[in-house]
Every structure is written in structure tokens, then in C-alpha cells.
Length: 136
Length: 281
Ligand SMILES: [Fe+2]
Image (cartoon, rainbow over all chains, first blue to last red; front, side, top):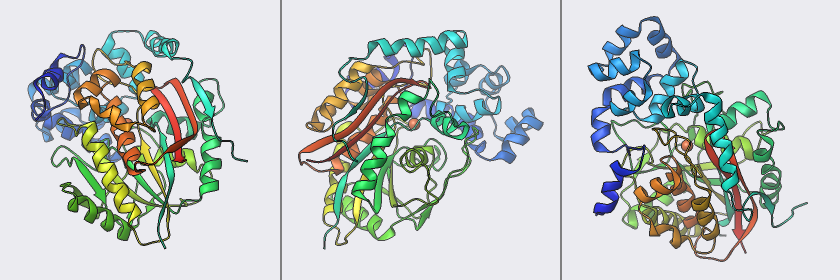
């Protein structure tokens, strides 16, 4: 059995909701639409008529609004999973660093600086390249 | 005549690596510390000359969707294609499969009471292609056949580190009992710590990564003290891709291992990146 402590973590890690059955059920339509964006023709169809494309996947009103608003936190609350949402973001030319900036409310450069700043936390014992057996 | 496990190659598989390769950015200031980890990997592969790779990775929504999400899926196809993943990466070369070895692994796994999914058709995404592009950058075709094993890291409940280590150990038993003369490299891809979504996006944890690197070779059971939810807390939501490393480590068996090369760098994209080669001591 998954322990109560682990189950509680699904919703209690700060700034994080682990994507479980509840979210997967809530987000099915939105994620299904995003999954369809593996195909270029579908990306094109979405861009050509976003309303019609979203209707085809029967997005919930909450999901439709989140997509219309390009509101990533709202997409997550509506059950979107980041692996699939990344395909939608790609249509708008956004990568995962853009997504990070959007979700944390930081300007992009500040978010990138935050990523780089974490290098300072590396124990020198594991930093960088270590070659234990040289091969000619 | 017995197959030989020559060792294991582990690496992060961040899609942005594919972008860097496509642009030829391997030597720029941002990417060089990561790509510097690969000449020694390539020399090792040239020395140990594997014929087959057993690859533990996770699908990111290319082959599997939420309509049917296997916890563990083992490929048993004659070939595996990569396809458009929707975010602008090039489509990578296809892989030749090794169905006979796949079925042998499947027999051992189900015989060991792992209720896996078997796939005679399976696309593989950047989690397989990018580690190969990094390892064999100039190959016209891949020099090894593959047996891909996909672990669900998308939808909780996700299998525990303990279960993934046990899965890997069972795969290792299958490889050691295979009556062929193949030289087999085990590959584990993904990680290390990173989180893409939510207000905690950008989270990394070099201390937990160090814990994993300190114990993976000599005491992989140490990594099973955490539930997968605890791993998500420690390593970030996508940091649970360490499960692929744990399973790959299990496949090496409980033999003394030596580290050949290791490279740890923060950040590439949103990720604490690591590359590692282990071989039997
Ligand atoms: Fe990944």
C-alpha cells in the first residue's frame, strides 16, 4: 500500500500537485488535445481555428478558458499534465524555461538566473567531469 | 556461448540537448560543460563494443497516452521509430529491435511475477534518441539493436524505486541467462533532479542527486528507502526519472562495479544533468 504519508505528499509538496488519478480524470480532454499536437496537421488545424479545434476535444469551460488565456497554472489546475502541455506550448513557441518563468511569475531572465544560481549548491566532490578509467 | 553485460551508460535526456545538437552548440559556454562528458563515454563504448542495448526510459506522450498507461512496458518489435513530438525536435533515426531477446526478457519478467505490458509496436521518444545521439553522434545507423523498457513516470501511482530496482534485477537475470553471444550495454536515461511544472518549476536538488550518485553503484538498495512521492519531493516532479537509472542499475546485477566516467552539471535547460558509465569491476 502507498503510505498515508506518501498519499499526503501528492498534494502537499509546496507549489506542486502530483499528477494522479484525480487530475488525470479532470484533465483528460485537455491532455487528449495536447497529445494530438504530436501531428503537424493538428497543430496547423488548432492555429487555423482554435475554437473549432478545442470543441472537437470537448474541453471543459475551465480548460477552454485556460487555453484561451494562455494561462499555464490554470491549465494545470484543470488537470493538464506538463508532458502534454509542453506540446501546446510548443505551438506558441514557448519552451520549458518560458513555462517556468510563466508559472513562477518571474521574468524569463530572472528564471534562467535562478536555474544557474543552483550551481552554487553542488558539493565540489561531484561537480563536473571525473574520468576514473582513461581509455585511449 | 553466453551473453555478456558490458556495463551501463546513464544520461539525462533533456529535449533541449537535441536543439543544441541541431544548432551545433556543443562547444559554446552554456553547453560545453555538459557535452564534455561524452568523449569518455564514446571511447568506452568503442572499447566494450556492445551489440545490444537494453534501454530503460520513460515515454513523454509520444507512444503512450492516458487512455492506456502501462506501468512497465517492454518492447518486442522488429524496429522502433521516433516521430514528431510536437515541439520542434528533428525526427531521429529508427532503431533495430531484437525481438528474440525481448521475448526472453518478457518471459523472465512475467515468470518473476511482473505483470508487464508487451509492445510489438512502440514509438520511442527523445528519452531514447537523445542518449543515442550523444553516444554515437556520427553514426549513419545505430551500431546496436535495442530492447526498450518504458517506466510510467507520467501518472501516479508511479512504481516505487524498490519495484524498479527489482524489475531491473529481473531483467539482469534474463540477460545473464540468454543463450546468445551478444555484448549487452544497459542504458538508463533521464533526470537528475528537475521540475517543469507549478510554482516550484525550476527546482533542483544537488544534495539528493549526490546521494543517488554516492549509492547507485555500491548500494542501490539505499535509493529504495524513499517512496516515489518522496523522490518527487526530493528530486522534483520530473526528477522521478531517476527510476530509469535505478532499474538500469538493477540489471547490472549484484556485482562489484567500477565507475568509468561521470559528469554532473547544473543547469541544462531546467535540469541538473548527469552522465555516468559503470562497468563490472
Ligand atoms: Fe524526461
